[in-house]
Length: 114
Image (tube, rainbow, N blue to C red):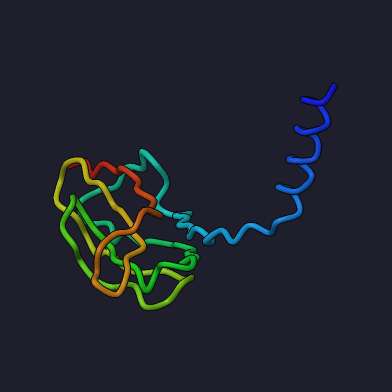
């Protein structure tokens, strides 16, 4: 019984201490969708919604693991232009002030068919 009381007291004390958790960022891509298919003449439009979180400073756009540009707006769209035939990975990553990805990211794979 004493173990139970000690555990209950410990649990009550622990639950009363506010936890300061860092807010994680999020990245959502609503277009293009995973597995989308395009012709080589189609201008591809990226539509995104980002929350930087406590540690994020800005975001970078990558195509096939190559950094393309910095996304300045947290919500909106960005023209990617046309892509060469083949499979491509489009990623948006939250980065810190040193331009290092810090975790929150979203990637979609698309296919440009000749």
